[in-house]
Image 1 (cartoon, rainbow, N blue to C red):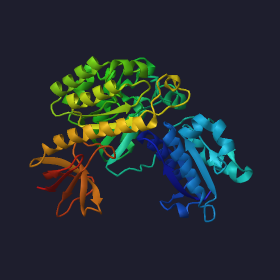
Image 2 (cartoon, rainbow, N blue to C red; image 1 turned 180 degrees about the horizontal axis):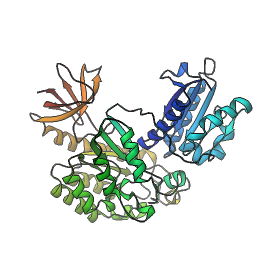
Image 3 (cartoon, rainbow, N blue to C red; image 1 turned 135 degrees about the horizontal axis):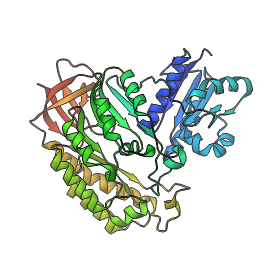
Image 4 (spheres, rainbow, N blue to C red; image 1 turned 60 degrees about the vertical axis):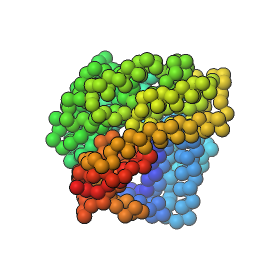
Length: 434
């Protein structure tokens, strides 16, 4: 099959790794990938289904892609979480799609396409073996993701992931080490999974720290960043590894979702406020300078104004370096869907805005403390609008947190520079190389 492929990948960085495996299949078959959808004969839309808004975005991407039918476009492949969970509803309704694949069907891309060219529309969801083939990295050359597990067994009451991705499955350590080695020279390796801290528990023993140690031994890996570490599994051993391992970036992403015990219980979360406070105090005492990022949900069913206000106060007390906030999304087939006290959309949006306002104040104060100081910054590239280089300090994750914009006689993507900070905004820093 000699076709030109285009791809739109939506959703999280875990989904991005799945998209990179699809790109690997395309490369294995000797086909070309284009960034210009108008030039594509086959368009792959790698979908997200985590929230209703994500599902709407995914369907909109397919419909928009269908607008290229009058040109070179011949087939649209709809893959990922949306068909994995909703194929019964999707296949008869989304007639713009020609081939439908699930989250473990990358290896079926070309067989399903060949069938579609012969027979018409094809539903191949669930026909794959789940084998993880080669990847074509789609991030900046110096940043790569390593997905260490799939699925989840936390069963938070608002979340569809276990119904989409299934139970938690850790990938074999030797395969992950080999994959990390195959990625080539990498300044920042980002470990991702729905819950990285539970790595290995599905096979009987938590071996997240041993995995970090093994990856740290690779000469081609310079730094390791840890995302999605659930608070109740941030162990003494993990804290010690972050503190003592020079390759582990002093940064931790810990999704908390709320601070009030009643809401946490309703969410099915295992931590309580006292546990979270104790963990934060331990982290800051034992790992000086550590940056913590987290996420919170506003407007969970029955959340009172007092509990919302308590969450705002909690932000002021904990002073997280980076935070994301989301309005609760009522998802079918989750326990929270049927809970009493569903909150109006306008109220949820108002609460999200209030949380962001508080966090902007905290972030601005935090960043003001760097003005006049010199930071090590990795150069991610050039910002054409600002006419300067753009990069990140250790407390800024790629495409998630703020950035450092800096001037320099010259700078190379993927190299680190000493940048003297001259001013700050709510989420970004500005400076010049020393």
